[in-house]
Amino acid sequence: MSNIKKSFLILMFIIFVQLIVYTVFLRPLILTWGASENEIKMPLVGDNLAPYTSSTRAITINAPVSEVWKWLIQLGADRGGFFSYAFIEKALGSETRHADNIVPEFQEMKVGRIIPASLDESKSIIKYNFPVVYVEPGNSFVLKGWGAFVLKKLNTKQTRLIVRTHGRKLPSLQSKIGDFFRIPLHYIMERKMLMGIKARAEAGSGVQLSSTSDILWFIGVFLAGIGIFLMVLMSGSIQRVLLSTIYGIIWLWPLLVFDPQPIYSMMLLSVVAVTMVWFVFKHRIS
Image (tube, rainbow, N blue to C red):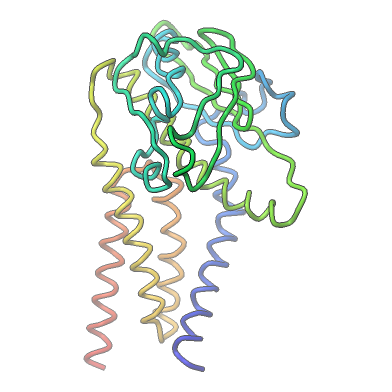
């Protein structure tokens, strides 16, 4: 068997193992990230608008409900952005405003408003907009095609932000496969959105937040993935195949499970890099 065919089979095996680990262990976690058992089961506004609930995620914000609401209703490309990874949005062709302060003219949410994903949809790789179908001022709103955004008061200084994503009818096998891969991508962006709203509400209006940590986290994850792929190409012995598989599984943790901090992705990148150097050194002396 040629080296190319062998590397391809090893790569397919690693991806297969990753999919099993993701489906059995990680998918249930990312669908309920941050949410309590009660929050997952409790009825929320808009539940009747979807055939089923896709996910329920939540975060505790150390700020009063009134302050969190001011940031939450600035959601949208034409207002304050999506509080997520701006560099990923830009790479997908999305043009978005990014506000680090409370803007008075954005402090109103009405049924019928369209929340755009981009200021120029023609440049977007993925095109979508979200009509507002329900609003309870100061408390919650529901977006068609996304789901419910709900604020729950814990005390005078703490708020729970709950986002329940609505499921969609998936008539074909192709749509089901597409949704299977869409879910983790949506999770990565939505998790950061929750963390972004939390950071802004706790920091206060006018405080500019750095994206350096986000970029370093992404670089670490990306380069670690590339490194694991190169390890597959270098694999020959059972030991190398086993290490490539183990690293491929571990790679899912800084991507999906751990907080998106560079320390985790850079640690994995360092381990992968050292292993690759060891592979090369061992090959040269053998």
